Length: 297
Image 1: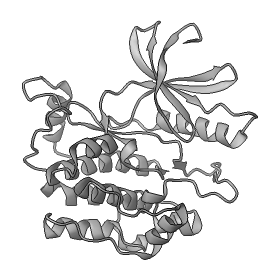
Image 2: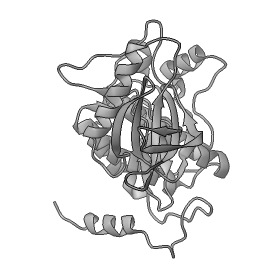
Image 3: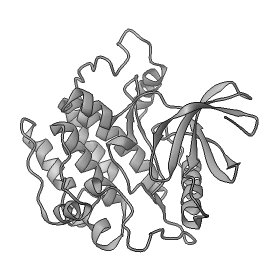
């Protein structure tokens, strides 16, 4: 299928989510690989879904950070909205944990710290992700991490609208902060809670709070204390406990603070064969980042 006489799509989708499907494709005008996200095909119009899809595109256009995908284009094809984005090679953290098992402490800390850098940029723009989870974090072959899928993100502006469906809480129960579940409210510390759930999962290989129904998971998120992660430094366990505090006021004050607390654990990262390029392969991204890291502010 070719969209607008320009974007030639692969036959099968790369993945599907709550709002639609993502296809790999080729931009014939600029001769480059792209990812094209289509809004879900419904039997009738869904104005709320359309607004959320448009809002995601505007958020991606506003959020300029190496850890977030670049939005190239936005439009309508056959009465369906679509986004054209940077094609990202890599593996989701969900697949990484599924194949590798529990991750080494340095890698769990490094992935979380990179996510913090993106969240810090987003929160500075009053953008709250609201659906941070392992399937929305992608580890690239050079070791960098991309934060994906801002479809549920909230952009707090004077003219922004709160999007909720009657009788439905938007988000993924296993990673939702108690305040999202109880009142539908989200803020920067809600994203940090979700990142705490992801960290716990990366270090144990299993979801933190599970249950036979969403309501069971909701109740556990609101009421249960997380178990300690065996075999990791006590200070890292304390950090995860702080992230998973039920009261958002008791969590770290921001993503930048969390980043600093994670840095001591993100050292001497071991190789992850099959997921990363070997060290002999040059990485222009890492070369650039090393120099930026030496700049004193």
